[in-house]
Length: 384
Image (cartoon, rainbow, N blue to C red; front, side):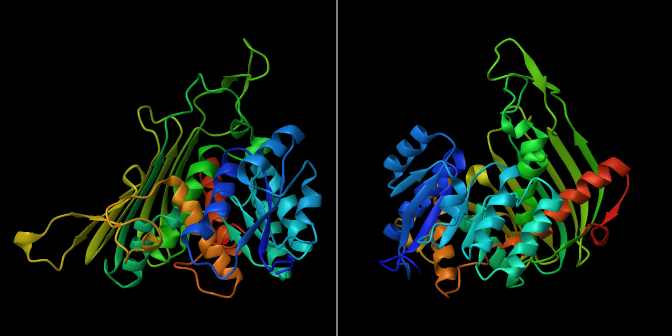
């Protein structure tokens, strides 16, 4: 580590929703986990000088700046955390990698496949490690599902059903950056489908080899302008995406994402069926994993709910007594603990996604777009 006190000094780029989640995680991880190296909150960069200084004071960052490149290339910084909108990821992450830093980047890896490929290639050339904030991997129930599938608990995989449903994107929702293709790259596809594709790949340990039957739909074509009351602007991203897929081992899958599921808050769901058992998870019940095993005698067969809060479950031994559940913010703290462990030469609790890994998810998202446009099946071998 380069810091004078041998910390893992961090530069955070971005101070909004994800910036707050990441700042909380960097500040909190060392208080609950016995880390090999202490994270140092060295510098934070944002667009507005006054707001960034206030952010630094609130979360304990030593320095604030409006110059992201100065933060990313700061000589005392070891790791750069990119928590900016999608169109900034490539430029900022590549600059940090070329400066010799470790880089942790928000998901999706980038707004476009070309940018994601450039980031992957830069990571291949760089000395630093890379990480992507697919934080749902750090939900204890999801990590347990990953471990159970790896142990052969569900047997041969048959079906994967994944859906990420939110309801906040109705016609009254203004034209935020998430509805602008030039900034976000896509809508529900990159914002939500990215999570469930990564989660499906992570839990099953298999790659998707074909996408078909894709539908990409924009229902709300005009949205209120935030800076010009009474006027609207054009939404240039999708509101909903549905597609089918096939895994390398032969399992079939369905994926659905929308920000127009009226009545739903944040239902990130996955269900997996094999010849020996099945698993299902819903983030709205994030401390639970439902399991079924065909090994039980028929009179006793049925779904049972595992409350994933025991000290033997992933990460939970570092938190509260058994039965005291975790929340959304804990997934980021768990990821920071694993990032610090990995950078220090240790082994994370479950695999962390790097730029190479996240690029594979980006290829699936691109295949869904191509399938919808061409109204046909797309082999992942066509998407490079």
